[in-house]
Length: 287
Ligand code: SF4
Image 1 (cartoon, rainbow, N blue to C red):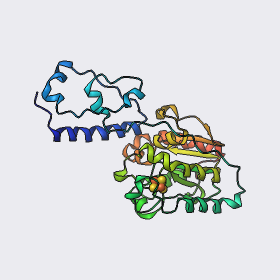
Image 2 (cartoon, rainbow, N blue to C red):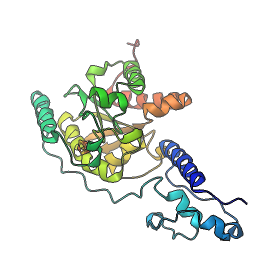
Image 3 (cartoon, rainbow, N blue to C red):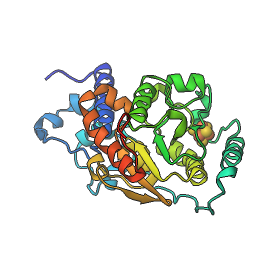
């Protein structure tokens, strides 16, 4: 077998990173390696070109690293999760007429934030948007390029799809509140790193505590993971109502994922129908 060159290794790592991100959006968070012929891996010209990462991430999965291929799969592809910090204590609910001003105060507290590394590459902080007294709130992962340019959440193609989903629920976008786990765009739209998400998410919790929606819809696995502090496959979240900070949490796919795999729109609509039942809504056009 020909030796693995550095360039090939880099390409392989990039391809694996893309595949792992895709699998994570599908709700698959535990990856198991396929058995590899140990004689093949014992060849020095292969082992010498594989970067071995001494990351302890495998221990987090309850298994000791026992093979170089495990390191190859985990190296920098998906950062090891740190323990989730406890969310801030929930304050008393504010009267509805104070919600707007309270959100402004949170925005002022964020200011020209440099609390995490995402500040170095962002253009605009994307705070959130919508009705400060909304009954329904959506939480996404983080801003993309269009959002980074405009300072508003969900304004790109994913935003158009989200608008259509909201309209299908019989609502207008202005009637809901929308925010993200991180308020600055991760470079290349990558998934936020745990330290970035954990640094920024207290602001999201404050927004939730001010708006106090009846129903909170988490868009994708990153959103639900940082909202709940719990990692589960999407199949472990979808189809049920989960209590969270006095609201009813419902989980569905991220619009960006639905754009990549439109066959999942039917499943997403089922999730939104669950939200509609909780809100006592009927689909658009039906009285
Ligand atoms: S992502 Fe959040 S914590 Fe990080 S710089 Fe932006 S606003 Fe601050």
